Amino acid sequence: MYPVNLFSLAFQAARLSALAVEAQSVITMRLLGMAGMWNWPRGEALRMVSEKQKALTEASSAVTAAMMRGTAPGPLLQVAITPFERHVRRNRKRLSRHGARKRPATSGRRQR
Image (cartoon, rainbow, N blue to C red):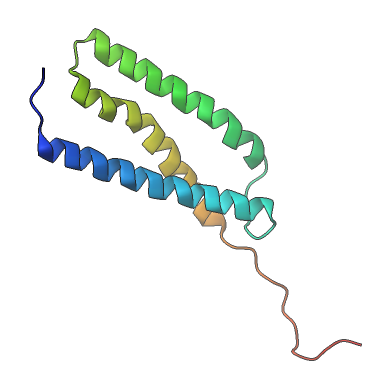
């Protein structure tokens, strides 16, 4: 049995919360992109499927290596979420650079 480190648990919970918020912003930008309201790069639909496999493979490899080194169960969570954090952060930065799609300017008068 491992002693409970409350600070470590609180830090991990905050880290997971930040990951959830960042992931939700990526989901929002992608949904807006599908709706035509957000500029997004070519191939984004394919990328959002293939990157999940890559992140999962990285996480499982990192956890397996950590377990083989004898890492305690507590720190394994940090090892597991690090690849997901990296992918989500890159996606958020990349997608946020493209920005919302601009509406065409109108003159205020109705066209007949």
